[in-house]
Length: 94
Image (cartoon, rainbow, N blue to C red):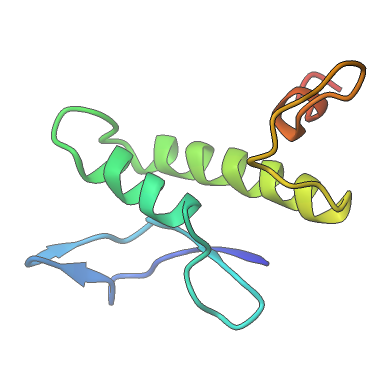
C-alpha cells in the first residue's frame, strides 16, 4: 500500500486536483473503498476545500488501513464479546 499526493497532472472534469490524496494498493490501483470515500468527501462542494485538510484525511485513512493490514484484521468485521473490531482496536491516541 502506498500513499501519494497527486501532482498537477490529475485533472478531472477540467479541474486540477494537485495535492489530492491517492491510496494505492500493491498493484498501483486505487485502494477501495477508501479512495472512493476520499473522492466523495473532498469533491463535494462545501465539504473539504483545503489541500492541507485533504492530506490529513488521506493520511488518517492510510494509517488505519496500514494498521489493519499489518495486523491481519478484517476492517469490515464487527467486534464481538471481548474482541474489538478493527476500528475499535485502532487507537490513534498512542
